[in-house]
Length: 161
Image (cartoon, rainbow, N blue to C red; front, side, top):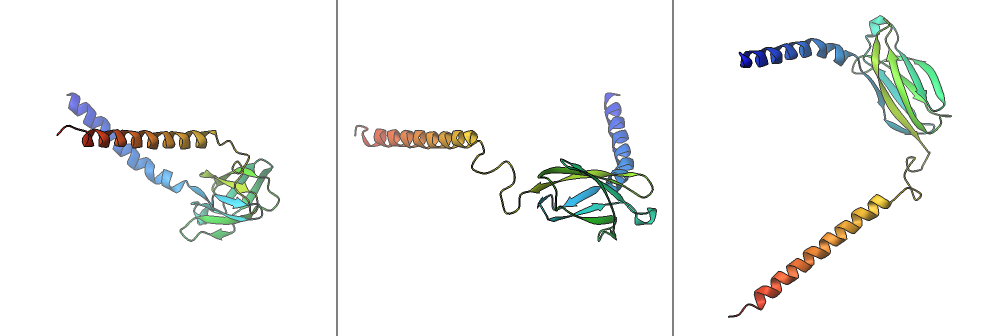
């Protein structure tokens, strides 16, 4: 009886997953590339059905709360729009999409970085304590291994004959 309960629960879960998977696969929003310098371009793509009308992408972030309407049908299906990041503040932005029929199509994020520089948070002023600790640990492990190998070789060569 217990095995039947487990099998029944597994079958029910698989059945519900099969029913919900197509809906989850349809609700998808992507941003490409995920990182762009100020003044770069990102492509917002939603899996909305073009027949239901334009998709509306809402972009929110450090200095932004704006809507961008889809302009073209995406190559793999759905709708897309280009967003120029000129004038954007450095940071992470969230894009949520709403299809023409009012359904939501998920969300995605992208990051705006400085022009010609390392992404924010890296560089000479960043905290290198973890890097120094890791390097020190590796040096200590190598020294310990060398000491152990040296002692083993001495024992072999000094053994009585």
